[in-house]
Each structure stands twice: as structure tokens, then as C-alpha cells.
Amino acid sequence: MTNDHVIDKADRIYVKLTTDPANDQGHRATVVGVDKSTDLAVIKIDVGHPLPTVKLGNSNSAPGGDWVEANGSPFDLSQTVTAGIVSAKNRNIEGGVGGQFKHYIQTDAAINEGNSGGPLLDMNGEVIGVNTALITTSSGNMGIGFAMPSDTVVDVYNQLIGPEHKVVRGSIGISFQPNISSAVAKVYGADTGVLISAVTPGKAADKAGLKANDVIVSVDGKPVKDGDDLVENISQRHPGSTVTLGYLRNGQKLAATCTINDRADTTEVAREDSGADAPGAGGADPAKARLGLTVTDLPAGAPPQLHGVVIRAVTPGTFADELNPQVGAGVVIEAVNRKAITNKREFDSLVSGLRPGEDVVLEIAYPNSGGQTTLTGGVLP
Image (tube, rainbow, N blue to C red):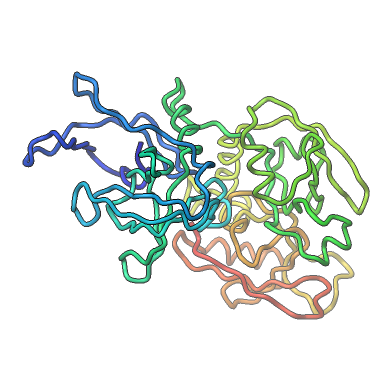
């Protein structure tokens, strides 16, 4: 086991054992499988004889404050061991779609560049995590390191060594707001749950009749607390299985039977919709191809202070889906990179000129905002 970012884009991979000669570069390795969602990878070497192993432990049984040690080769110093404690668990340091499956063990055991892929051991000498990341302002250890929990590692490993060499996760094809504000909770009558921002056309939620602004409150009768809770529940289900989603629409309690999709297929649809495989391609709808937005002209009778286009849908996993502040159905886009727009034709013209790697800032407004605008943006993938 190692991290995907350790081997990503490598032409050749070598694994050096402690028994190898000092001037030996090690054993040529092949990649068995990778899972970018957890930044984990399985590689394989053939040495012709059994190798010693270290036991995987139970990361759930390691409470905060337990002593741990991190192994690795920081700064090319091989066989380095640092000690510390479990500072916290279930840490999400990335946010958004990219961080949905990266819930780390946080430790103050020194983790530096070169520790990635090494084990985080408990006091029994069992691996409870794979050292993966650090937060630093100086490229050195600041006492805040992160390891992927062994419980996640085991699941990913078993799937990567399987016949398909990939991790399969369930999906229902939605994007959602991470949290529901108190105002939304009052209006929609939902103290907890997941507010849908957009539904991927043709996928599970869409076929089940769910729409943007519905609030998913339960899965098979089990209450859903938030987005993380929903993702954890659905991702563990096998594609083709069915679940009953309880949801609220305009305060009314409803239920729908939903057939789980393969998350990889849903992501691929989002990628195709966003034009990610064809950077710079024009396409029939540049807003959808480049930004992941479906927009229309403002409807007749729109407040006179508004101008631009109104968002009808946001494709999950696209540039628009990752924006913070978030955008969703009903939001009005009034300007792109400080250039005001009055209709869809002008918007499409501006979007057609955008290129991957370019900063894109949208000036957005809400129909009842009284003319107040908000800026949101990011780097176009």
C-alpha cells in the first residue's frame, strides 16, 4: 500500500527493502490499482520469496490521545520514526467533492514530505493509518499530519486487488449543499438532511423523481444528518441495488425508490457534460460544457434590478459545482470576469472564450436580494 500521489505520473516505480544493498535502487514495481478518491494505491513487487509483513489494526479503536508513531523516509532519511498522539479523527481537510472520501486521522507525530505512504502505528505495532498529508506554512512539519484510516485502507485494498482493480462506490447522481442554514430548516421543516442543489439527468435521483431544492431526510428509514452521512451511506451500496429515499418537497413528506448507480459512471457523465475531455471545445452549449451550468434568459416579470441569465441546473462534479459560495437553480449570473451580461447570447459568448487554467469569477444575485450581488469563482479545470 502507498499513496496515489507518490506514484502518480511516474515512469518507473521501485521498492527498496531494508535488506537490499545500499547502492541498489530496489525492485521494479507494477501498479495493481489506484483510488484517487482516497489517494491510495496498491503496487506489487516479485522477489521470489516471502516477505515479512506488519498487521493492519482497527483505526476505529484508536481514540484521541492514544500514542502513535509514523514511519517513512522524510528528506531521504530512510527508516525514520517519529512519535506523537492521535490529535483527532474523521478530519476532512479538502472539502467539496474531492474530499468526500478523505476522512483522516490527525496526529502531531511529525509527518513531512517523504513520509507519504508510510504506516502510522499504534502501541501494539499495528498499522492504523497510511501517512498521507500535512498542513504547513514552511514545507516542514507543523505538528499537524494526516493519515488515511486503516479501516478505509482495508476496504480500498481488497477492491483494488480484485478482478477489476478498481473501487466501486454507489451514487444517486446529485450535488448538494453541505449544510442547511437555520432559515432553510425552518422554512422546509427539516432540522437535518441534505438539500439537493442539482440532479444529474438520467441518473438514479432523476429517474426517482427528485428535484433541486428537495431535502433528503432518510435512507431506508434511517435519518440522514448531513451530506457526509448521505455519501457514506450511499457509496457503500452496490450499483443496481435499491434504496428508499425519504425527502421533503415544499414541506410535504414524500418517499421514492431509487436504484443505485456506479459513482464512476455518474462522474463520467458529469465529466462529459462539462467538456473536461475536450478542453476548449465549443459544443452546443458552452456554459454546460465549460462550467457545468444550464442557464436561460431571465423570465418575463423578473425584478427590474436584475440582469443576466438564471441558472436552471448545475452538473455535479464540474467547475460550477465546486464554487464557494455555491450556485444553484434560481441564482442569477450578472457578470463574468467583471463583464456585465444581459442575456444568454452574451453569456455564451463570454464563456466560449474561457480557457482551462483561467481564473473565472461570476457576479451572482438572488431574485429577492434587492440588487445585492455576491462574487464566486475559481480556476477553470
